[in-house]
Length: 360
Ligand code: SF4
Ligand code: SF4
Image (cartoon, rainbow, N blue to C red; front, top):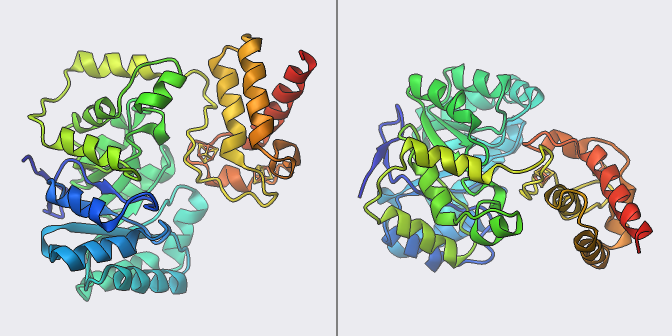
């Protein structure tokens, strides 16, 4: 099986690893199946429900700790919280060390300043000197200056970024930059927040399988490891299928054709990743934005279709969680990695609902 170098860490990783983001639907046995099937990289985070605990169970059962690269992340922006997170992570996973410890989702200038001013990077160096972490990592959703500065800062040996056929732009910017600095590149969101999978792509009017989406990412030779979320058994099967196939990178023409096929109409398309939650007003933001997504897809003219969708919307979103409650506080905007203008979209959502009701 192919192994790829994780930049200057010199760790050798399988091109596909386990994105252990929220595992309520799978068991420690599923993780074991993935590892026995060939993956040697598991990425977790303090914020991923019981993910670390299940990883710990799997490690205790299999005794494979030294064969697997384990990473986790802390979302804390203050030193006390970060230290607490680290001790919790290491205890949950029953290990003495973390291979790559990530600062989680440092995507705004405010957070980039906070992690530096509050000593989190110094703490990573201290943990490394003590042998409790092996390498420093950071994840970011910023595709502009903040992401670039993070990569250029010289502190991090691994960077985790979002890249997929629907969002290929980073292959012109962050990926070659990280590669030139010999930083390991881990790719999150290869399914574009779930859009690039069989069922969702059909809903959106194009054909794309999860297998194809993974192959597209792995075809980039600068990528060290792609970590699809695997919150269901079927995604483990897809990942193992690609990993264990005699995989041949897609040609330039095939890569381009895929990008053209999956380009999503409308810049304001919500990927359903839920980073924006919770809303202080209790609004179900991603659920509400599905209405706007469909408005874009149906070209705003297929009223029969939109009428049905609005009925479904009214049945599933209770009034106390509806878009009408938006106060435009912008808390969610700061969290959305795609910079969606959520308050505006909430207004649009209300307009779509009312407009459609006018056609009843
Ligand atoms: S801007 Fe609106 S949707 Fe976003 S957090 Fe504030 S109230 Fe909630
Ligand atoms: S609004 Fe942004 S953060 Fe929230 S689910 Fe949609 S894409 Fe994700």
